[in-house]
Amino acid sequence: MHVPKIVEIKRVVKESPTVKTFIFDWEVHEEVPGNFMMVWNFKDEKPMSISLIDPVNNEIGISIRGVGEFTNQVHDLKEGDLLGLRGPYGRGFHMAGPKILAVGGGVGMAPIVAFTEEASRRGFSVDVVSAAGTANELLFVERIKKTGSKLLTCTDDGSHGFCGFGTELADIALSETNYDMVVACGPEVMMKKLYSTVLELDIPAQFSLERYMKCGMGLCGQCCVDDLGWRVCVEGPVFWSDELKMISEFGKYKRDASGVKHNI
Image (cartoon, rainbow, N blue to C red; front, side):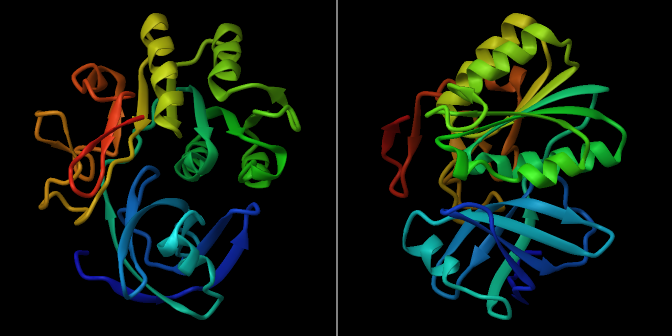
């Protein structure tokens, strides 16, 4: 678990102009939606959310947006090329219902699509809000449709679905339907607004946080939040809304590799 397995890329799926999903043969046992893997390109290592968990075909997938040296190098890899994977790590989403609203923004849709597929397999009813900047950046549309879940899309520029932010569309969904639980992953500004809404409505909710991680297994302390000692890689990345009440930095700032605070 703590030593990278060198695995062959089985398939590469181009999800959008900037996002690719890399699929691997993998003995699926402990993996749950919301977990992440540490991905090693033989030079550096980064955490990536699991976006596909297939216990039937024993496959997992990770979806990566090309935004820098590491991710662009991985994007250049093809089927048959090798990567190092270790994990799964972190606390994933808990499933409860029967009616769930899942909200994802950008590549934050990676754990949301895995959650939607697993929740649907287990008999939960899931409505999905998928937000992106523009139509060609909407992710996993066909996979979500195959689950039978209701898909609500929105884009910043109005090129597909509702014109506006994911939080606005989520507010509409929450006003029209009684949900038993909300799950979310995406930009922290988006999740902060949704967090305020679910507190007002008194709906249990879970949010997947992103912080700078080095080890992924709770040893280095790089991803600790506030002075709580909570490590996002172990106690998270998924936190319940009542836990977020104790994390004062949520929606305000993050730390870089040197520990310096940066406003969100």
